[in-house]
Image: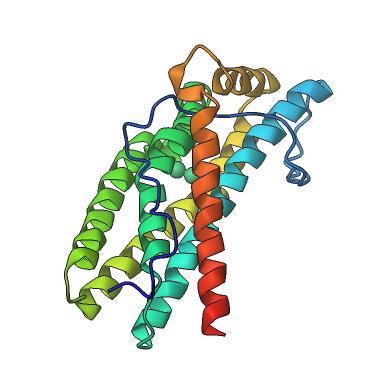
Length: 239
Ligand SMILES: [Fe+2]
Ligand SMILES: [Fe+2]
């Protein structure tokens, strides 16, 4: 079933039981902070920096997830055209989404949303209940990923099932990130104070919280880079 000799290492199983947890560093990563002119007067540069970095990190994580969704989309498009997909890429993307958002990405957004509800409940309610959305997203992602995994483990891959599950998974992820980029993050930028962002940044970097350890973040980065490397190799092989 695989697309060739199995020269690659198996995708590291991240799972929900990953030891340690979030590496949420606020150190610069090289790309400039987003320029979002909300018209708001900001306090000192440190406070402004905290807001920009929290937002930038969430956007960066969205960009990372979007790149993986795109890799999956490419594999499915090839599969639809009758080209054997790279199942390592597909499995890698699914494993990533089975763990990264739930234990690494959503907790940050949940912290922001919690504060947003406290200081601007009406505005917060206009975008619904982000925590509940995340729970639903996690459940549906798990359902989709398990469905695709079950399909991949069959000797004969039912084409229609793989495509249907895969496309639904892609749409689900994109819709959620688009909502956050277009509504949730701008609302948080407008509504939260400098002090809020400083407190949020501090909460996200707390070393006492087991969710915020360094190692897991690095594991996710390694997995993400491996998936994109496999994707590049496969595309190069196909010419
Ligand atoms: Fe989210
Ligand atoms: Fe998000």
